[in-house]
Amino acid sequence: HRRPHDQNLFGIVQGGLDPKLSYAIGGLAGGENKDSFWRVVAQCTAALPEDKPRYVMGVGYPLDIVVCSALGADMYDCVYPTRTTYFGTALIPERVLKLKHRAMADDTQPIDPTCPCMVCKNYIRTYIHCLVTKDAMGSQLLSCHNLYYMMRLSRNLHTSIVEGRFVCDFLQTMFPKGDVLEWVCNAMEVAGIDISSCCAPFPSCQENYSSDEIGTNRFDK
Amino acid sequence: MKFAVKKALSSSGARVGVLEVGSCPAPIETPALLLATRKGLPHFISPELLPSLPSPDSNLLQVSPLHFLEGLSTTTISKIGGLHQMLGLKQHGIAAVPRDSIQCLPESKAATRLGASFETPCGRLLIKPKDYIEMISCMKPNIWASLADEVPAWVSEKRNKTSVDRTLRWLDDCISLYPAAGSIFGAIVGGTSLEERKRCAEEVAKRNVSGYWIGGFGLGEGIDERPALLREVMDILPDEKPRLTCGLGLPEEILQGIAAGIDLFDSTYIYSLTLGGFALTFSLDKSGEQHNLQSDQIGSDSTKINLRATAYRKDMSPILENCTCYTCQNHTKAYINHLLNVHEMLAQTLLEIHNTHHYLRFFHVIRGAIQDGSFEEFRQAFLESRREHFKGEAIST
Image (cartoon, rainbow over all chains, first blue to last red; front, top):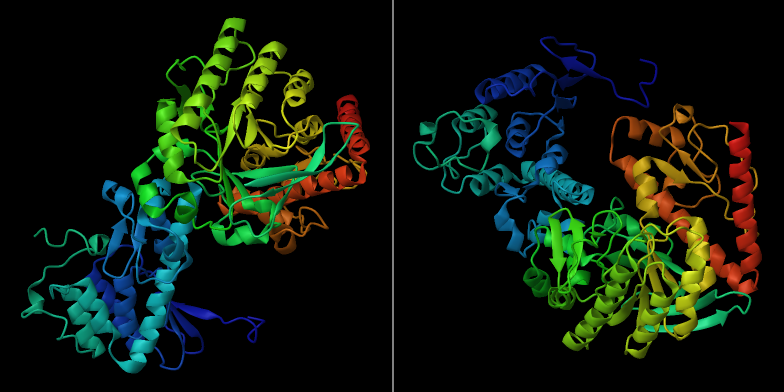
């Protein structure tokens, strides 16, 4: 590598370790079981040096980013925020919002009333509803909001790690009834983060669940 | 809305005017181009990039109320306070015209005495004056055209005459149902019949309207038939009110319309170019001459280039060397060629920015020529050098 001062080379960990380089953790974005997923990330971050950034490629859903950050990962990339606009899905703090749904046709609030992005400042759900899946502009506006959400998420994670409270706020908003998913509870325990304030009694009673349905339908058990 | 003619040429109908509309930051000089939109916003240029286009030239938008029939009720639009609020475009002027030459096409066979028919993405719809007025009153555009029964050039005399009768009746309905609206532009139709065009213009001129919307063009008439039809209408209309037309898009057609006395143009030319992967490159020289017309590139004719062509795969120059648009200042032909090949929406966004910018500059140059009194020379030079070029093309291939 001829430009060590301009470009940072990241060594990819796919079952191997190289002590000289920074680290990209790959092979984990393929829809594998969440329980295995967090354990592999935990193992990698535990084994890799503390003083170099760890980049988990292909992650991902907001919940996955929160958990991986808790386990010691630093960087992420994912098509999810923009690709999900094909289907009219917006990312908001509690959950995802399916803007294509007929219920959105009369909703005159912004996508996320707490979001300061250009889209939430100027447009309302009903207008985005009539654009998504049909017009290029719909994808553009929604991508702008979703990416802003991801930026806010990262910034909040950063501040909260310093202040020690965001993970709990995030989990409380995502799981208002305290039914935090078991794999998340286990990961946080290994990470050394106390989330007992977000969990209802007997948190380990939750069954394994796939990330595809975060925030929706999880009460259909 | 306020409009005033600043200078009119005696040699032709061309005139320069000033339009003050809504909360536009500055008065808009005419002849001017209205940007085509889909559901109120440009097709690909996102709202935060709009300010990068020439202003206030780019502050006039044409919106078709029929676009909103797909998934957005008029009561909701009304609740928000109208289109300007809903689109976040409080400093723009909006002209509502039902016809949009891409998606909402007038269907003359299905029109009845009760309403005009349009083919839309929601299917064929019959729009009655009462429904139309309800849309307009909820949307609150600055300018709106009355409902018209537009017919293509090949219909019978009887059908053409009926279209004029209906259009006039619907104009009266629009005026009586919503007299206090934004500024109503009376619709003038009449197909390719000089008598019907004259009759319609005379009748509309009697009504109390703020301006005129000249419809029925771009529906099959020949480009050579148009000057006579336009002149017939313009001779009757009062000079001090603005004239808006639809369906004239090509540079030659714009020049034709301006020579006849049209002030405002709404056209989907830029959209069609963008979808095809074309970028406008014709010269904006004040003399109208199109020099250096070299068409060594496949698919280009030096008035525009087709960025899908493999010739541009490694071309690291901007679309146009001296163009100050965002696309030419930041990106190369090679990059746009790549984006088109991998089907990335950014290609259309960059092309729409450049094409809109270029066409708005074209109008700017035309206005300069009218001010200088050299419009007819400009027009002749422009048309002839393009014709020479196409002739040369035809011989060489």
